[in-house]
Structure formats: C-alpha cells, structure tokens
Length: 198
Image 1: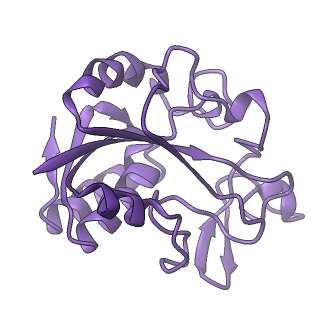
Image 2 (image 1 turned 120 degrees about the horizontal axis):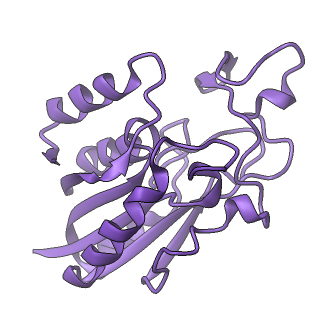
C-alpha cells in the first residue's frame, strides 16, 4: 500500500494572529513536520483566493463574517477576507516543512469556494489531486492540518468517496468549531469509515 500525507492549509491566516485564526492552529506544525518522513509522498494544500472572493463577507453588503449566503452550489459560510493570493496570510506557516512532492492550490476561482483538496464546493470541479495520487499509485492517505471541521473533513470525505483508505491524525489538526461543526464533522467522517486517530 503506497501512502501519502496530505497537509491541509497550514497557512498564516489560519494560525494565531491571522485573519481567520483557528485556535491553536500553529500547534499542528511540529507534529506534521515529524510525520513527513514516514510517507511515500507529501502533498500540501493551500487556500489561494483572489481579492473579492465570493466567500468573503466583505463581498456581500449587509452580511457579517460567519453569516451564510445561498450560492449556486449551496449554502456558503461567509468568511473574513483570508488567504488572498500572494499575501503573507496565504503563505505557509514559516515553521512548516514545505519540501513535499506537490502543492495543490484551491479556492482560486472567484465564484466558488473550495474546502476539499479534491473538489470545489460544487463537489464536481476537480483540483487535480485525485489524478496525481492515482498516477503515483497511492491508495492510502493520512490527513493533518487546518481546520478539522472544514477543509480537513471535506478532503477526508471526498478521499473516502473516491475509494482511498483514509486516516485523520486528530492530534495534528485543530478545529474552528462553528456552532457544533466539529462534532458534526467527526460523526460524518466516522460514518464513512474514516480512521480517526487521536
């Protein structure tokens, strides 16, 4: 079984002091760095939004951060402006090893958000990650990073749906936990036989 580590969105804007800081977000850096040498491949995902992205609350007059809006692809949480292309906030945390095999940038289409490393939020527009993994003969994935209840969970669920064996290293993840989103994400992953390592 060929195994890959998927490092999800360990970027400055998701770490303390960032525009969309995940509590304890920087605490994942050391455990992720320590895990990397155990895998046949390491892929990093990077949120990479153009300015004025449709998922930003600032693009919706009268809406605040963490409100929701209806989009053609479903209900979208509106976020503070974050991970704008080329900004310091979009950069990987300075302590994170970035000597992996591939960086997948997502959320770069102005009109659609992308939580999963595999698909945009319409669940059909691919990022190219699946094709890369198949071409490498990778069948088992371990996920770590930010945030457990959004980008990590969406990536894990898509990976399971695509037939990969999936493990999530919860000790190397941190959550936003918006209105119970963490518990819902954990239950959703368990229901798809995703191995949750604590």
